[in-house]
Structure formats: structure tokens, C-alpha cells
Image 1 (cartoon, rainbow, N blue to C red):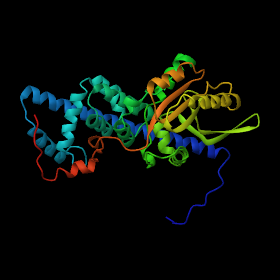
Image 2: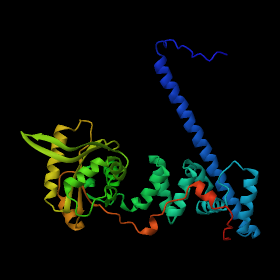
Image 3: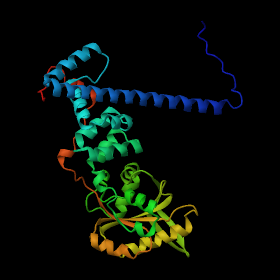
Image 4: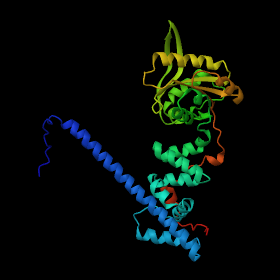
Length: 350
């Protein structure tokens, strides 16, 4: 056959649109195939773990059987990763942690295996594991993002900002808005000292806007910083302006480098009124304010918000790392797990 390049003709009308649609269908098919493979793998691992648990309980098999099983399975399936003694023990722990096979099939099988290990290794019980599993599925978190949120105690911080949303938003929006805010916000990714000033923090947040959006949570879209508002010929500048895609409303964020003071709410309320008048679309919800301060007196903040006429939340931010060292470990890769097998017999647990 000739190696001469094939001369392509000009594509017919409509070919470009058809090609785009075809690429999308192929991509979707690839994704479905990957998800199907993952689902089968997770269910297989649960079944293996369940079998180990059952046989150890009913027949008195000790932990050494796991080493023998790992050796035999790797001999039978040399091209298949995941049959190390350590991973088999994870399978047993996985089945023990989730005895409800229906829940595993309907919910957990949507998450890759190494998400499952993050839930097992870094969380203490089924309640918190279920919450993080649901969040990971809903927001399509990678394993690294899941681990980051676990280590930053997202569950403990979610919905903890002080707000008056229930007084100024419809019930459904109030609940979603409250859950969308946290306290404290962690800005340790900025690399700033605790004495950083407002403009310095603001500039750093914009520079690291991807990490900032990740910390804010799902639904926030960045609009701009120092957004100009012209009110009666006078110029005012909003620190940070966002739009929340689920709440369908603007979110004004103001930064205060010191302790919360009730007078801070006056300026923020003015900004909310101006945004509602100048930027808000008729179909948008009421603009929400979030005041981020270095510290706050909870009771003072609650009193200040009680009679405020607009939906506002107050939360603290942290600029420096504050996690205990024991929570800063990262999970091993599958290659690291396999390398551990090179010769060392693992101590057994029955």
C-alpha cells in the first residue's frame, strides 16, 4: 500500500456539528464504561472482604490465610493489581464497615476504590463516612479533594456561620444558603501570616481563586474583586463578588482583618442594596452578604444580625495551618502498597 498522505476533501455542510456530537457520544460511552468497571471492582472487593470475614468467623481461619490468599490470587491473575495482603485486609475492613450490601451497591459503588480507602482510613464511623461519601458523589470529588475536605474538617465547619437567613429567605433557600457557608474558612493555602491586612488577603485570594472557590464550596462562581458601584455619582468598591449557581443570587464577601464589629454590617448592607438595585436580574434571589473576619464574639454577631433587614452571614477565617499532625497523612498509592509486599510478611490480625 502507498504511504502517501490521503488528501482530505472539504467536509460537507453540517459535518462539524455531527463530529462534535459524535465526540461527545464517544466520550460519554468511555465514561460509562469506566464507571461500570469501577462499580464491578468495588463490588468484587466487598464480596471478597465479606467472604474473608465470614470464613474467619465461622471456620476460625486466622489472619495468615490472607497472606496465602494474596499469593494464590496474584499467581492466578498476575496482570491484576490489588491482591496484596494489605489490600485484602482493606477489603475485609470495607465489608466490616459497610455490612449493608444494598447500600454498597446503590451508593458506595459510585466511588472508586481509593475513595473508599480514604473514608476508611480517615473517618471514625459510618455517620461521617456516609456524609463525605454523599458529598463526593454529588460534587464529583477526586480522591485528593476528598482527603483535603476530610482533613480540613468540612463536616464540622459546614453550616456553622452565624446568619439571619431564616428571617429573610424562603425556607428552601434559607437551608441551602446556611449549608453553603462554613465557619471558620481556612485560607492556609495563601501562605500569609496571621497579621496580614485586608487588601493583602484579598489580592492573595484572587491570585489563588481556584483554591478559594474550592474552600467556598460547590456553586460559587467568581465575578470580580473591587467591583465598582456608582451610587448617585459616588464610587464604592465591593471587596469580592460571587454568584451562587444553585441559589441563583449574588454573594458579596467583605473581609475584615480584625475582630467583628456591629458597624461592619452597615457597609455590607449598603452593598447588598446597591447590588440588588444595579446588578440583580428580576429572576435572581436576594443578594446574600458574607462578612469574613479574623475573630468574632458569637453573641455580639447574633445580636447585630437579629434586626438586620438583609440576609447576611458572619464567619471567621484562618490564615495558618491548624490541623493536628496525625491528620496530615496521605494515603498510599496502589504502587506503594504493592511494593510493600516484596518480602515482608505482615503481622496478622484475626
